[in-house]
Image 1 (tube, one colour):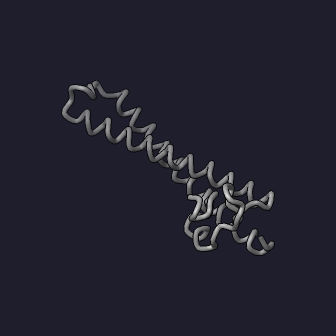
Image 2 (cartoon, helix red, strand yellow):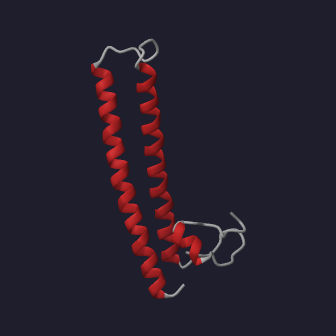
Length: 115
C-alpha cells in the first residue's frame, strides 16, 4: 500500500474510532442512567407492565454498547495492520482487498471471496 493510501486509511480509521468512542460513551451514560433510575424505583421488571419495556431498553442499550466497543476493537486492529503494512491484504488468501470493500468497511480483514 502506498504511503498516501496508508495515511488516508489511517485518518479514516481514526475518524471511525473517534465516532465509536463518542457513541460508546453516550450509550454507557444512558445505560448508567437507566440503571440508576431502576435502583431508585421500586418497579419490579417481572410483574410491572412497564417492566418488559425497561428490560428491552436495557438489553438494547447493552447490545448497542457492545457493538460500539467491538467496532473500536476492529478499528484498533485495522490501525495495527496499517502500521505493519498488512492493511488491505486478505488474512485468509493473502490477496488484496478491493478498494471498494475497504471504502465501505475500512476495517475489513478478508476479501469478498473469503468473506
